[in-house]
Each structure stands twice: as C-alpha cells, then as structure tokens.
Image 1: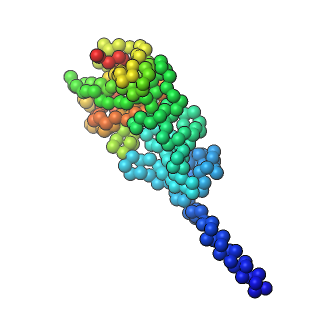
Image 2: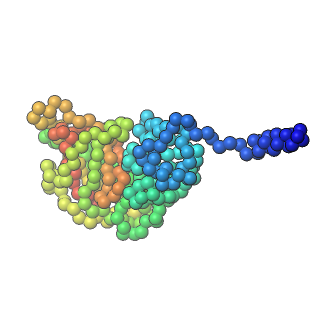
Image 3: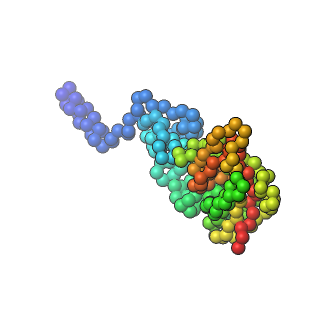
Length: 263
C-alpha cells in the first residue's frame, strides 16, 4: 500500500509540474451584449472570461480579457472583435469574418495602410480602408461656416466615389454629439450635385460641410464637437477627423456631394 501511495503521489506531482494550469476564470465575470453574441458564435476560440468588460478612457472602446485573447468593442464603428494576438474575428456588416492582425477588411478604417482583404480592384468603389481624410480648409461668411474635407486614395489603383457622405459629430472621447445632416441645400446649392468621380492612386476628391453659428429662436447654446466621423458614400465604417464644430439650429449641418478636387 505504501508503494502504491508513493507512485500515485509522484504521478500527481509530475502532472502538476509538466502541465501548468490554464488561467483561471474570474468567479464573477460574464459576457454581455455584443461580447456575449461573439462568444456564442465562436466559444472555443474566445474561451472563458477573465474579467468583466471595461472601457478605455482615451477612446471609449470596450475591452474584456479572456483565456484565449481579448474582446474589443470598437466605439468608432460599433462593431465587436476578438483577437488571439495573431488573428482577429470581427462581427461586422458582413457577419463574422476572420483576418490576420496585419490585415484590414476593405470596409475598416486603415490608418496604418495594412494589406487590404480582399485585394482592391481598379475601378471599384472607394472603400474606407483605401481612403484617408483631412480638413482641407475652413472659411466663414454671414454667419455660415464652410469646412472643406479631402479624401485621398491611398491605393495603387484608381477607385470611384458617387453621392453624399454620412456624418456624425463627436466629442473628444468619441461620444456622439446630436447631429442633423441635410444633403445639399443652404449655401451649397451652387456646388455640383452627385456625379461619378474617379480618384487616381494618390489623387483626391472633396466635399463641403456648412453650418450656421447663429442661434435659432430660443436656442441659447449651439452644440459643440471636436471631431467628425465621416462615412464615405455607400460604405459601412467611418473615418474620423479632428475639427472644431459648433452648429446651431440643433446641430444641423449641410453636406455637399463628393466632387473632383481642383488641380
């Protein structure tokens, strides 16, 4: 009996040393909302929770560590993702998709200019991943401010733009500021309407946003924003640009159609 007991003890000790335990799940943590949905889609890949969801104070993204990686709710586009450090699964506009961390889907913002999947084809619509956005200039007259924004095609092939952008004002923490977007109108009526714009590699296209800084009726303060989230025509995720906005009339902004930029 003593020999059997000794053998059992040594075997247990060997297993404990050779096969360290996986990180323990926190006793009180749980998956909720979008993280619960993503976990239910790929439970073995995500693993179990190690903590409850918390938020990055810098950008508002939701974060939750798991036994196999990290869940992220991206506040900028409202999609959830899971990464194991090498691959990322994104629950986005086309359902659940997987890519490498060194890649971006065509509909995702791509400030690092990573490889785009699927590869861009000449003449296709300009997608978010192949565009950058900057504030080109701002001018004001008679209580109306005109901000002109420039898209740049960062691809090695031409792409096309047609129509109007989507726009949402944000504060410094990416929280939405109530915004009313009007296509055309106001002082933009003298600008061209929608037309197909071909943007060559490294080329650009522009649109103008106008807003009034004069309060309307009993309006005492106008809505303040420090960023603008812009969704290119017919796209799914925004590009975010820093800009100071304070439109009156309850956050009303007018946007022009995208047009070819001046040489």
